[in-house]
Length: 258
Ligand code: ADP
Image (cartoon, rainbow, N blue to C red; front, top):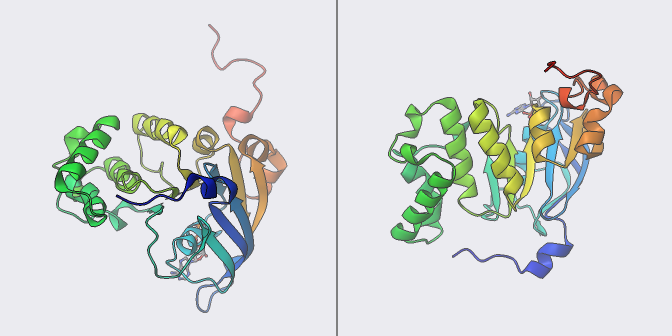
């Protein structure tokens, strides 16, 4: 079984801490120019920003897959070490094909669990319970490369969450989901106890899943606070290329007369 941090240390410290983070790809303009972000245990934080603003780059840095030029990054009080795997951190990639590589969905979901030392029986029963909970039991024997885009997405999310991480980074998790799967994912994330950082362009999705949103643009966090307050600020949204979400626009009359 994977050891968990003692509750006392999880309650007082930030689960994610980013201080003065700077990063550039070789021979490119800097992507991140002094990002600061602290996330408390159990918080669900949306990250919004225009295309190319550095959301994925920030996640890759937090996962230790890129090395910062300068600044400080920690996850669960441990400084992020580039190139080392942290089993308490889950990362749902933007492209599910980057994550799914086994012959069947069951093999894919079991891969990490077996590596963590769970027995075949324990692994199978965790997979069955998880697939039943998500209404996806019929996918267990299917090859992942034959699944629809939405099914792949749900299985790639399942493959991360089933590992029981404490902190999860989700990069555009709602993309290519149909309404039912999107709703299932929203309910799942709302009820999850993990600390979540969710990058998305779908502001309505974030309004339903994250109480807090940070806006990343021009290499910095330009605004950070209540999702409704940030997204309800029309001048702020417009100045960073977003529209105020429809659900936050006051309606003088209902959409449909009864
Ligand atoms: P976002 O997720 O907000 O759309 P990204 O983090 O993917 O933004 O990209 C930030 C910037 O870094 C973009 O200008 C993008 O073109 C650039 N970039 C991303 N990956 C690479 C790479 N491997 N090499 C060079 N530039 C990259």
